Image (tube, rainbow, N blue to C red):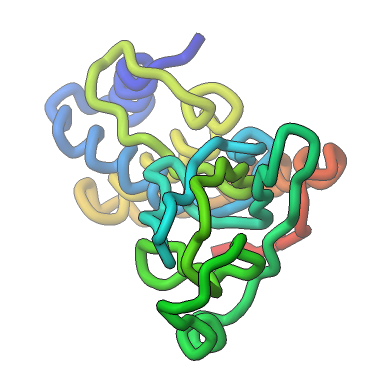
Length: 203
């Protein structure tokens, strides 16, 4: 299994620069950050558990959630309700501190999830969407970005190094082409697997 350390070693070998340790680390982190909001099959989040507390009209967006496609409320042991997604302005205008009931609608507002009422109970909720990437620190750290997304991240990181550190336009262009090929492959594979909305974007 590929790790953060493995990718650093491979990049250093491929660009033939063993003196750019910190620059390679920054380039890898920047590459993951650039792609974490893209929907691939390996960064989809399914029914991640969180909770709404009694008497609350909002909650902090869970740290592992980058984007939300669906929220389900566990009403009781046998009943679940889908929350309807709304614009933040709609929810803000609908909220009243005297209305206590089960939340039915929600909106994202900064780093919080807003609900359309004051919760009348503690509820377990299940969130599906895009998972936020966890920044690696130790050389043995691993994630899907170092396995399924390895070629994409490695070539993006090398392109960053050739552009910002080494100043090599020819190799920058080669890495960007390989990055695009890796991106297209991952998107095609994600679409085949039915990972959600198809967004054939290229940056």
